[in-house]
Length: 241
Image (cartoon, rainbow, N blue to C red):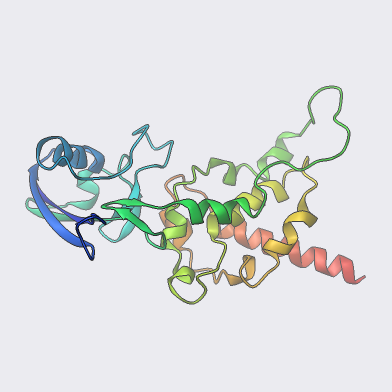
């Protein structure tokens, strides 16, 4: 099957602006987009820059925009994005993050916002003799956001960051906060509240659901954001009583 990869290229040492270059290649419909990119890098243009690691949808390092949608290149088959012979597959870097080179973005800002919600267990109570026991029902309350691989696809897809509120902390950070808000062992709700209960926190989300649509792990990101909103509202009501 013949396809053309239309890849955004940018070398800060030589280019003033990003531009697209096209690479006609032969692939199998069951090949992954990552395989197609590797074919270009290994046999056509060794200067092509992109991230990859596990190649099995676990590390999240090869997240990029493929035909206008955030995807993992290692989980996206050619047949998912190219329906017929000669199709063009357009590949761009993630959005809302500074461009380093070609398909590689600077991730510092994404992780800085993620760290602001204190994404770790907070509990100053004396530790029990063994582990802090949870029931299966208690564990199920926060199971969904534990699947996050920090690929930043949801951050890239979020329309709020397009200009309406570039300071929005982002869906990944809030989903991670929800993971601990609903953990029966955690006692850090009040510590996270100033960041979450803020115009740039949970209230910036307008339920566009783009984060949920693009999540490669199937996390109900928008639902977790709304659950966090509900917890904050409940805490406010209890404080007023």
